[in-house]
Image (cartoon, rainbow, N blue to C red; front, side, top):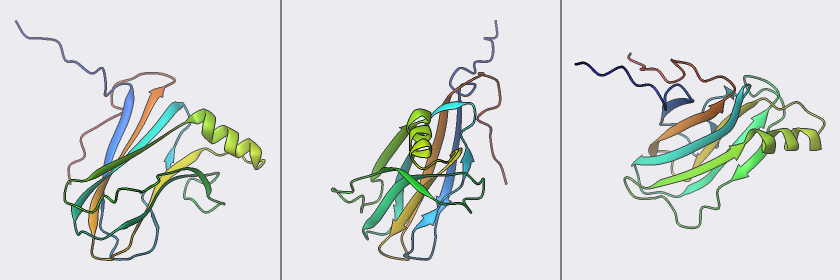
Length: 148
């Protein structure tokens, strides 16, 4: 007897990974995503190449889907123990309520978020994971395979 297809996590979370190879030591906004209909956002950084410092790891919010408005810092990781070895991982999380409060404090309707990552060494690389979870409506396909 075949078991039914299971989609519990992937119907209640939108998960995506981004290769991070900026060839720069400037802060880079990874990807702006829409928080409409989600209660929470989490991101992670995973070191793949290099041993330099990670100068900043933040969650930013903005009114514009491309980040062209004013960035507002929602959370900043206190990078006390540097993730400077292959496989090191750090995490950040925020709620839609924190984003809304920051927006209200600045008379803005913040809707879009990104992770902002800054290496001290331009040749370092990593992977950044995004997870938007607790959607207003769980449905199939929030997390999907991405094949080039």
